[in-house]
Image (cartoon, one colour):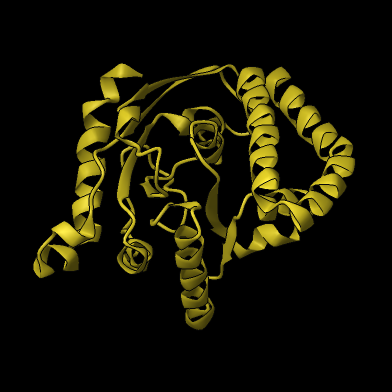
Amino acid sequence: MIRLILVATFVVLFLIFSIPLLIVEYFLGKYNRPAKDTSSLAIVNWAFRCVLFLSGVSVTVIGEENVPKDTPVLYIGNHRSYFDIIITYVRVPRPTGYIAKIGMLKVPLLSNWMKNLHCLFLDRKDIKQGMKTILEAVEKVKSGISICIFPEGSRSTSPDEFLPFHGGSFKIAEKSGCPIIPMTINNTGHVWEDHLPRIKKTHVVLEYGKPIYLKDLSREEKRHIDETVKEIIKETYFKNKDLV
């Protein structure tokens, strides 16, 4: 329980004491949006690294050279834990917005930082609103912001189970022309969700697949891109099981 107490205390204190930073970031964004993007990324990266340290999480990263540094991308990953976001965010080389559940908007201060980081909020029960969010993500990518989405739509409750990938997630790459980066995460459920409320020292494996450019695919391959990426992630997941 000590790790849970340390993490919870740190997060609460960070959110409270970061209020002045949010004010500074607000005014900085009025005059210099790129500077705000850079500073917000650095601040949240630091906070997330502290959370990982306090949680006792170590990460082996494979294939990071597959992530282009000179262009925004669409990260597609499997989803088992809230720690998926923390672990992957500290690796991004450029401003990156995550697509989160709309309920996150109700969390004070945290939602402010998420907005600073170009996160978007998706209501999967509202098809019209969901399409609007996807189109907003397309505009983010066109402006140079990478997007990360977990297309299962919810956290899988079984370590080796993959929920269906929602095809709409891939519209972001289709309409923006950005590369898709398959992102496979092993063992994050063991950090917290598998034994609530305790946080346990855990080794996680994160592997980035080679970029996929939809423009290089046939019409038939594009139609089944959701299943193709899911199979890449599943194959990588089971390949890396022995590494955790």
